[in-house]
Length: 242
Image (tube, rainbow, N blue to C red; front, top):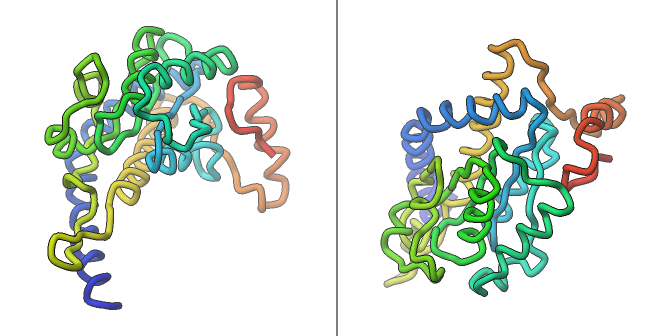
């Protein structure tokens, strides 16, 4: 590997280990909250605007993950994330189509924690009686002003906060004078969500509940198995099972 890639790998790996350890108590607590909801037939919702949608999609319809995960998707790819009112409209449309029910949880992902769409989705969910978990970079969020007229940022709105341990600007590797590369928000954010899935599964297993875990559709019989798992969530999932 080049010196730049080696630098990134060493630094990012250390950040990943440190951040996972720091978030472990919060993940376990949130895993129990979501586990109780899943045991009652609830759905876990996700939303991420712009590049954060990559992280949100990581746990939707994922082989080895829970079937009951659904996402609010932004057809503009984040282009309208700072248009005040747009996030509320997204949440309202999704709610009409799939339902956002009291006692369920939504994970809202925003590295900066300051853009309008994720804040509005979080506020709408709270109004509907959902638990809101915010996955964000607290250090970056504290360094930038919110664009939402409410004046708050994601970590100030969320009931549960997962901090990706990143830095302002996201990138960690110096490549030239004043130029940084090598972002960490996706690497660490996706890992935190997969750890959360395992904490939910562990809670379900410990308390004697069924484990609604999807199988890879490339394994014989998995498509039929997954369809059967998803039968009870008909109309509630944003991603159609194969």
